[in-house]
Image 1 (cartoon, rainbow, N blue to C red):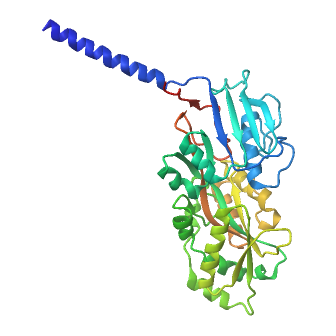
Image 2 (cartoon, rainbow, N blue to C red; image 1 turned 30 degrees about the vertical axis):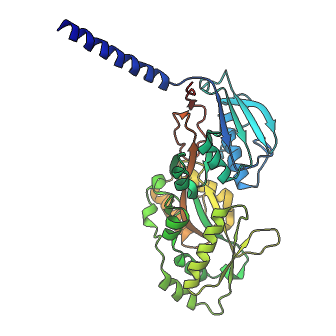
Image 3 (cartoon, one colour; image 1 turned 60 degrees about the vertical axis):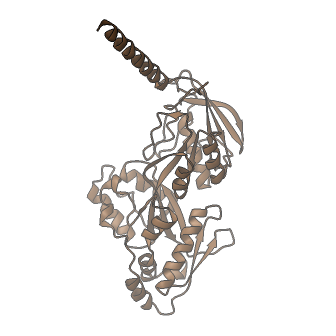
Length: 380
């Protein structure tokens, strides 16, 4: 009996020791370099300098969240030296950036020693590098999320945080009649865009805010109404054809534009698609709007900044403490003009390498929380 007891105690000790070692290996550790790849090409890190390219601007904001932890009233990062979790160690404009942990950061030192950011990486190359383990972190297109998972890449998706809209151009005859704008909106099959183009990594959009933000998104219809669109279009004498512009470097915009052209044709609307250039003259264009704040009013204010006054979205008259009903009313008034036509909501999708630990997908308006992640030690 004593022998059995000793053997049992020995077995338990071995199990506890093994569990302790496993627990120790999973505890956060300091050190290592996090390898990041982005598609954007950043030419300047100056937070005051404006950046017209949306992709470059978004990436610049993400990096700004690592360098600075103080924001301006409009949500942009204030260039206060040494205020963030990292500081610039090496910088090659348009190519790569190395950040080093700020030892005196008031929020506590980051776990990783450094972050290496390589720019201008195509989405397919980012997926390959994540799968091969030569990259630790990359933001990937939502439509590639399923493909990434099939290749063994760890995928993390946020709540819907980016809205794709159609914005009509002022001064163009094709969009002057509200019936023409409404007919086009009704003819679009948003569910098909989500299911087939986005591979179900998104949601149809009828309003300007997602359901999690103001709680009223369900009040805006999203279903296609081809019959109603035909009826409206038939009421317009000599209906002119429309031209839809999209960003030449955005494959998702191109796919959505082509899908819309098919949808509107079923309603009798003539619509061509073309790449936006200095010489192009388009009646409406695709625009991607990223939410800059989790507060509904501030999120709408960010949209006005991107779309301009032509959107018809009046935020100035909304009080800072506007209620959900007031915000919904302003959304409804704007959407009913069909100057801005919401299409789909997209999440922010991230690919993570196998050694990245304690990643948490950021909320709207938050940057990459890379100061909180740590790297699993490679097995010897």
